[in-house]
Length: 70
Image 1 (spheres, helix red, strand yellow):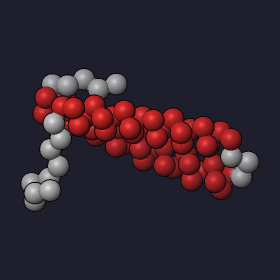
Image 2 (cartoon, rainbow, N blue to C red):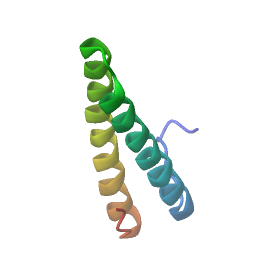
Image 3 (cartoon, rainbow, N blue to C red):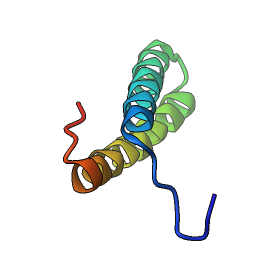
């Protein structure tokens, strides 16, 4: 990767979006199934972080390719 950052192509945006949404769904299931509050909080924190990443990815795709994700 160059020093100018990561610049995915359209198909990579779609692949990243799909993979991250799948991971988000998995974390939500794990959080709901967890019997330990500490573990549930860890999953919930990861979900929040992931939602921020998804939002950033959505903005970048729109700015770079006028691509609407989600």
